[in-house]
Length: 194
Picture 1 (tube, one colour):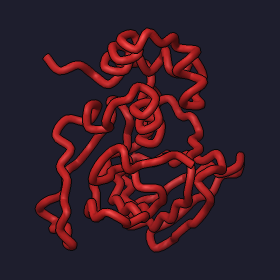
Picture 2 (cartoon, rainbow, N blue to C red):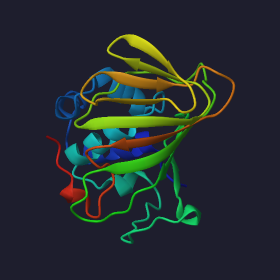
Picture 3 (cartoon, one colour):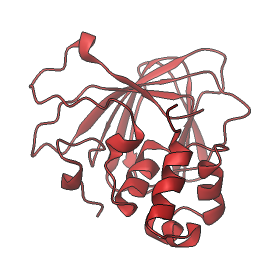
Picture 4 (cartoon, rainbow, N blue to C red):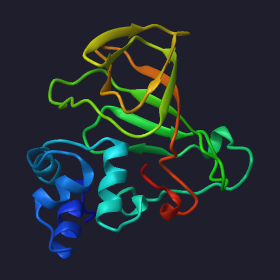
């Protein structure tokens, strides 16, 4: 039976003789939030999972089964690999390749209709984010303000600002996200948090 993300984090944390408080200090998440993740009550964002992996000296691929790498210049639509983290309503499809030296990461993200059981917590990470709405109505919480984006709308902001994406409708939301720094790289040790 496959371990879920929370169990994998807990296993690695304990094997490193690290307390929740110590891990919390490394990744910038509260101990209670990390405890909820370990117990399957909350799901980390992809960026938070990346920080956790770094703190626990693991590759992101340890948490995400079958994380394919693509070194071609072109990513074909039939080569998309969907990644979904636990109960998160976000599904990620990588649009960019793994070429060394590239700093942008492009993803097509689908956000399932909002579920009351999904815990929302604003994220912060290094770099910038640009999003373009393909389908549906996206609610963006940015610096305690709420923005509604329609198909064809775009938004560009510093990712160090607290932000969260929500689908408050009963329909699917699809968007293109281009951000820095890259989440997936050819070699996980190439990724450095600034």
